[in-house]
Length: 359
Image (tube, rainbow, N blue to C red; front, top):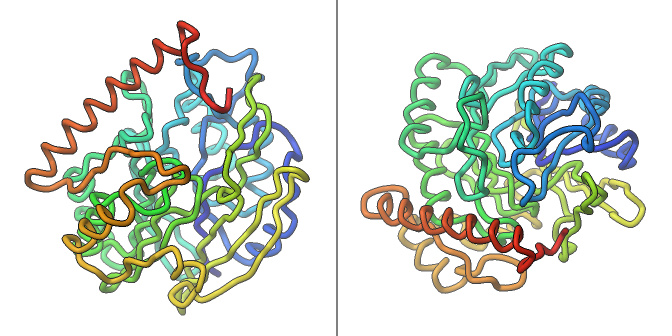
């Protein structure tokens, strides 16, 4: 039996997307997904949000049946939407526990352990500050990615579980970004250097590249899994690029890693199977990884020349070059500036001067 890793999932109502073809692909395995937003006990309109000035994602309680239909064993909760709704993360943890679905990626539960047939897996998750997770809380919330602390936790997990497959399931990067931030790529390689087997990313909503590094592998972004472009509490989720419709799922088997491609049709709300490949020789992944094999310094130069904008629309995003040395200070300053821009954006939305594209 194998273990599948899939990207972002939110399920605001019953039977939104026809996903029978997805069910067939993963019928003989078990799955881990990123649950993008809390599970609500009441209707979204009857639930309170922490921030009216952002797009608030959630899943209806019927998501449990969807997760069970996909053989989901664990949900990563380290993302920027898990605490959108007041009480949403506690309700999510309770409902998932009631149905024996594990959780990981919160401050109280940063990791979990799974046994899939004869193989033990240990899963760790964290959410970069870049996607703007909720931080001003004393309750349980998404574990915020702190590069050195995350490496220390993973090193301890490697010592405690020497025979397990150790997975870092990371919510990071910019939405719609074509390539990973240099600092994230560098960190992923450091994680493998100290014993992680796979680093698997999500949040950009598009599939990024896949790279073999020493004994491990890095999938920089899986894209979405079930993230319907429908109404969420009076606002329609939609993207201006078809790139979000190509979706990647990885299957870890005893003999290697397989990549499965799916295609989301927002017009007909359906998910279709596009093909399976050995991940290491997958042409689609190779096309998304033109930087494969180069070292960190070379990647920074390559990114500055080729991928500085790194996303659909060629928007000039702030680049995080490294989390080590001078880069640690550089990243801290840049993050503080981005946080300040968030507050300015909230003020502009509140005053009616700015309307986000998907409102």
